[in-house]
Image (cartoon, rainbow over all chains, first blue to last red; front, side):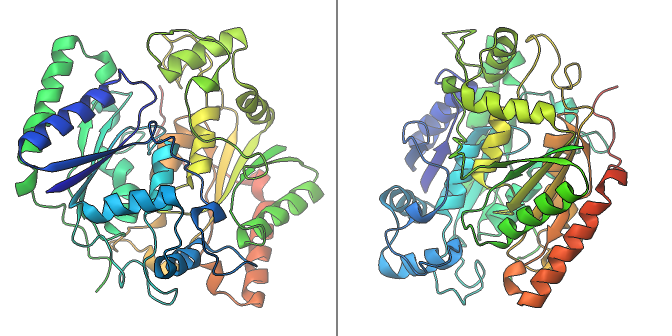
Length: 224
Length: 224
């Protein structure tokens, strides 16, 4: 498989960075091709606007999806987006590696999605169903939490981790066509001792070795 | 009430901008004080890092919550964050006005939360329960969608709008101490005619006029 890992954490010595290195090492050893988009290293700009494009469909009113459809036809994406779009087109599996911040992706990673998950077709196609550029691809979240696993209980104040990840799994990844694999959640690694952290990385490594055989989470189909 | 509206949309002539103007006009006419954080106008940087601070708690390892607790004690927040923190401290009601992008806040708005919802106390306090800086405040989402209301059905591919907003309502706002009001969702305004758009703005205006009397959504308590 071709695997793209989109990664962000503000601290290079973080557990997230260790998870990234583990994934890169294990997946490469399995014979996969791995590319990494380290959003810090890229100094990725997460904010969308006309700078996403070198072309203009409508100079009077900016509607991002229309500009994306136009840019897709006229090779009109800005260079930073185009590079990431090419990595995305190349990959069979997309992994997001991030710390869960306020129950979602940190802003820079959300902005990678906002800018790189682009419309591919004319404005009159129903994105993403007709276009479905990512329909043949799989995606997986790999994340850390600041709080303990016990915070994520059914009926608890935050609901389950599945509830927390629902908009990302369904309303982002599945909506864009991806087959979504179960997430790998490293709960509160900051509170683990060195042995515990190593054991958790080994658990992640075992999970990654079997990834190719894993079935996707069965969600209701977005399109008929 | 003192009301802070945090707003972002890339197009100044958007329906979101019209909703912002409606809110500002109606709430001011009701006798409330309104401040607006227009994230485009502020060219707000949504990415967190050491630049969030003028002080340093730990030069060896960057842990944002520890740096926030330290900065709170030593007046160590960067100017752009400090200005927003002061607006947040001032307000009784916080409104987020945004287009729903990939089932969440656009990156720049998520980054406003990532950077401005800061720890207030020592690192050994359990944020947010002990600190609970926002416990006396209320918050409300006001958003637009690209898709129709029929996309958000129980058992449907995306689940309900309540499912989609769950991590923001519970895992961001309630977790930070806010009393959360029901969201105002403007479904697919781009597909409405002029009359429909005006009617929707009037519906929003009516909602806003009764806001002060509204009860919060009853969520399970985060802290005992």
